[in-house]
Image 1 (cartoon, rainbow, N blue to C red):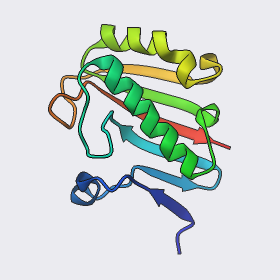
Image 2: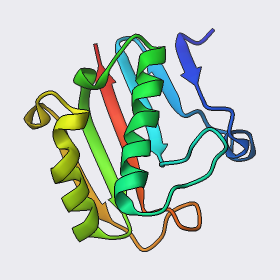
Image 3: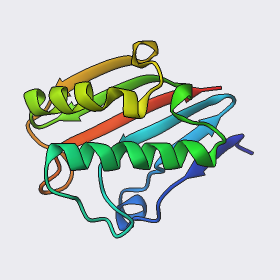
Image 4: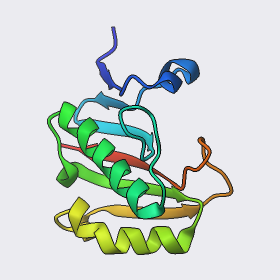
Length: 128
């Protein structure tokens, strides 16, 4: 018997690719790379809008485990456009974290992401 708890958004790709959006084991939550889709799986246009929705999705998943953004210890941001993503993260950092310096953050430029039009994906580790 597993002592893991899984959460998802019920998106078709969760079943197709066979993964969970988030897993909790012990006092740690691992959140799979999140993108800025809404409840219908649609992506907004532009880095700012996608990044805001991505963090909203992360907040939602954390809340299901009784956590919030202050529990985040690491984030990895994958982006199609480093300059735009850097500006968005820099400009919105205090909307996401009460103290952004308490999060180990890495940004990686990539040549492609999972969905057409996707500009950013963020992977999170949080702990109680």
